[in-house]
Amino acid sequence: MFESLDSSVRRVPVQTVVLGVLAGIITGIIADLLSGALVLGGALLSSLGFIALKSFVNKYLPSDKARVLHRAIILYLLRLVLICLVFLIIIFYFKNKVLAFAAGFSLILVSVAVEAVRNLAGVKKWKD
Image (cartoon, rainbow, N blue to C red; front, side):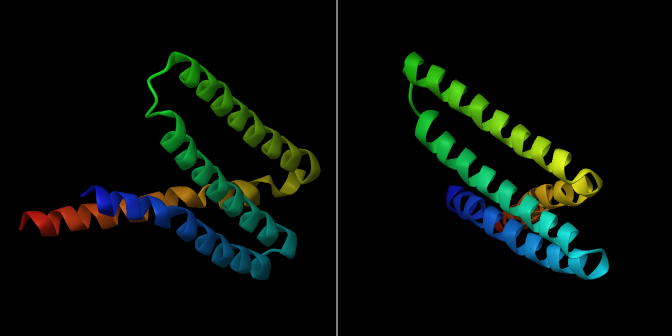
């Protein structure tokens, strides 16, 4: 069961980028190219954030040392601050296009939902 979970975790960033490219192209055709680029940029940033979070969890959480966990918490908070700074930069420079970036950033939720349904369908098959 954990093998499928690990493969799902590897597929989520790839699916997010693919969805971001498709949504970016569609948004670029329907609205404008800048909005399409921001959708793609949001999807890329969320994929990079997911990959960074996965490596963070694999590196720091198995450790039991209090000093390592303290450092891990500081690094995680720094990561959140950097993501907030990127959002603030997007808001500052592209006031009217923030929703396009947020839509691209939110595509990771669609990828996670797809993988959850895929894993649940696999569990149902396994029970029968």
